[in-house]
Image 1 (cartoon, rainbow, N blue to C red):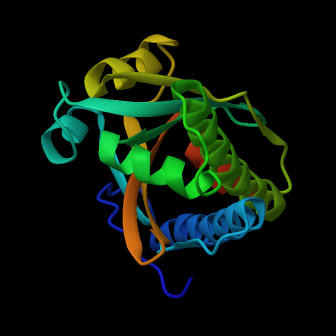
Image 2 (tube, rainbow, N blue to C red; image 1 turned 180 degrees about the vertical axis):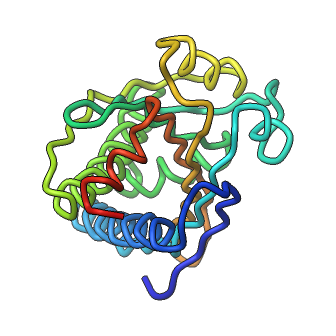
Image 3 (cartoon, rainbow, N blue to C red; image 1 turned 180 degrees about the horizontal axis):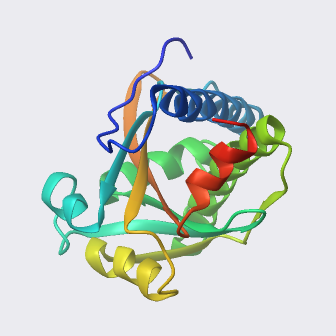
Length: 206
């Protein structure tokens, strides 16, 4: 993965802080692609993730309407920082990712498809958390992934409603997998608890 891409529009992040976020996404994404390739014994690449930080209402205005049906995998982050990860894909992208994860001519069932997507997201989130933990010398762990199909707004709202303490801002990491010449888009949403990002920056002195 070469280069970096970012589209953060919140004025309260310094240039150095944005650079750190980009580097963590770059390292985590690269590690995820390597781990997935090793698991399925197939070549999988990921483009440099693009990053955005939007508030709750901006997401529906700029990214996706609240009534669009999506496939989602939910994972929670615990330890020295807390938040929720939401991995969001369309039906078409999910089918392609499932095909990528499973052996050729494998008999697909709904349960196996959900398990394949959950394993994919588990690798991605774990790769990001490992990159953050190593860089900042902190302890971060994730929950077991859960899978659901629902309207995008309902899924995102549930992440906020689970705890009134979650921050208004959401970090969106858009991943593009490249498998057998086909580009498959997905997005990883991170809903942090208030102060999580600023506290992490303080730990490393920026």
